Image (tube, rainbow, N blue to C red; front, top):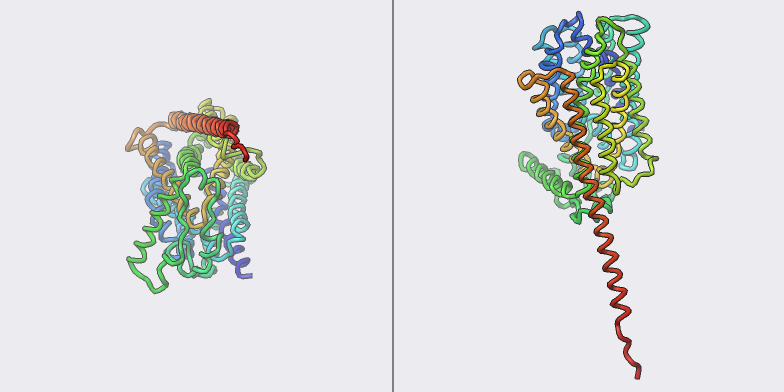
Length: 471
């Protein structure tokens, strides 16, 4: 009953924090009469702050989440969301909007607490089910919010300002839920000593995928209970010991070639994906200005979210040997994403909408496969570490791309030129994995030929062995 109560509270929080009717129309709102900002100010000066904030805050928030045991960071996230939408409603000017983006970056970085809290309070056997609940409810909340926003805008003819008010009310409801969650007594890293008995269970410390071990020949670190400091150890020594364990796990995990390949795609593609979805509204605003035409961003976001969820669901039913064909599949589908981004340059709003939906669905499918391929070979402790590192690398690449291409301190390119660059970026990813896939198949073929040759040689040797005369 306790776990059910906590899961229900997390689902309530996830739904209302994702219910944002104003989000599909953020660019139109900022460039409209309420804020009266220009395209260059929004795209080149305001939006990049979110990317930089997310990058800078991710690592300290990741460590603080585990050290503080989730609940305080959940409250920080809820507070940041409320502050974000209060500022969106009341504040004016570029500097205020940049500060708003900082708070939104803090809220985004704090999402790790939401997806980690449940692992500290439920049995490992229930991880998959409760994770599906939490992720599904956030997707449902996002789709519902986009649909509500579009219906209110198109049918009820409400103002964009009213959508911001509804989003703020939803964030306020979400703000209440974390306060009623109990404080966990354990966490994955800094308070793992309190679950020593759990560490002895294979599901917590010794699950290592057989294929990974065979391919890498480097066993991943299985944490021994004896190496965990006792509950009496405190202070900087314990903190540094845990960081050293994390560093050791990091080196051993990324020695696995298959995990490294999927992680590399994760980081590269997520970087490009963030850029496309962050600036898609600016592209649509240029193609079909909201001041002159009715826009349908809410329907597009709703449909793309639902189709993305469906694509993720279909992954479990695709008859694909990802271990053999994974790199080539990444090549083909990354090329499809590149084509989608390139064709948005044709400046037809319906084509832009359709390609955006296809782009998001393709990414959701592949990121689900990548998530499964990585997580299947790791226990929960390394799962959090690897995914955190992958996200950090993605944000680092995104920050560099934003600084050079988008930021007014760099090239400050217009949104159409940006999308040409993003399309080329995904094309480069596709070519990289084409080469990797061909090399992998060639290496596998050589191994099979060598094995066949050795087998034939052994048979030949056995046939030529003389049989001694019996006396």
